Length: 311
Image (tube, rainbow, N blue to C red):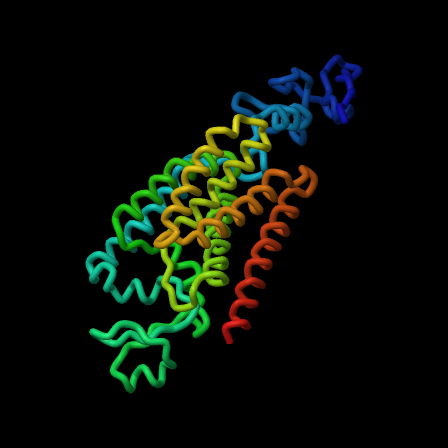
């Protein structure tokens, strides 16, 4: 509500504060030039301003938030760079500890059920107690309690082309999405997509098969970019072509590419992005938090259901 109080002058002709007419003052607001008393003085870049002008100035200042409620990042590529760095460090650790034969691969890769590896004889589907008697090493799966694999597998790569392709895609998609939705929401999108991809792998892949790679999270970013393009009524043809090419590669290479991880991550990215960009302006953050948590609860229920079925 705009104030309409006019400055008054005392009987002696001395100006008085426009908000406190009983107080004499010789100080004026640098913005509206109305006289203000010490209680109404607010520090400004030059001199002082009245409370009303300070409030009006705050309204006209460019918002520090994105169109979807997130804080506008100063460096929109920072989060993607950190994720790329983590993936690179894990890949280097795998390489220097034996590559595909590294113990890190067995510990961090996603496997639904545990497997007994006997040197020179391969893997066997036997209980951990029997594995030790046979001279093997038992590597647990999610069913055995290695639940960390649902997330660590999204940061694990063995082949240089695999980590290179995924990180290149992240570097292209990540900064523009972080700039659009903000850093916290971008992290939620990336990790949520990764978990959704892992959940479908856990639910639909052979239980003794190992799966690894950030592809699920990357496909989630593709899905999010598609949602964002629809929201702003942009040209979605380029995004659809890119998604179509990657989907075709997935189908052609389904013998060694996890279609489950790609599809799960894509669907997770679609759902999380839709919640972020279509949340109503009123109570936007609350709706986004509740919606994203709801998506993750659905993912966790799918993981529990698969665990029960395997048990």
